[in-house]
Image (spheres, rainbow, N blue to C red):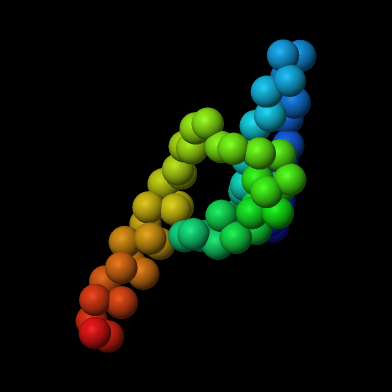
Amino acid sequence: MSQSIEVVVSSKGEIQVTTKGYSGSSCRQASQFLEQALGVRSRETLTTEFHQSHTADNVLREGQT
């Protein structure tokens, strides 16, 4: 799957940033420049892909310590 970042600006000026095709927390790294430019995040919704990879990352880190 290709990776993309979608930015939608509502008529009220609210901005929604959606990442697609990223696994785990790599979506946060990919969209970080937009969040810094746009301001404070008011809400975050995490996808199933984020949680699946995020859990695997935590298990790996715990096993290394």
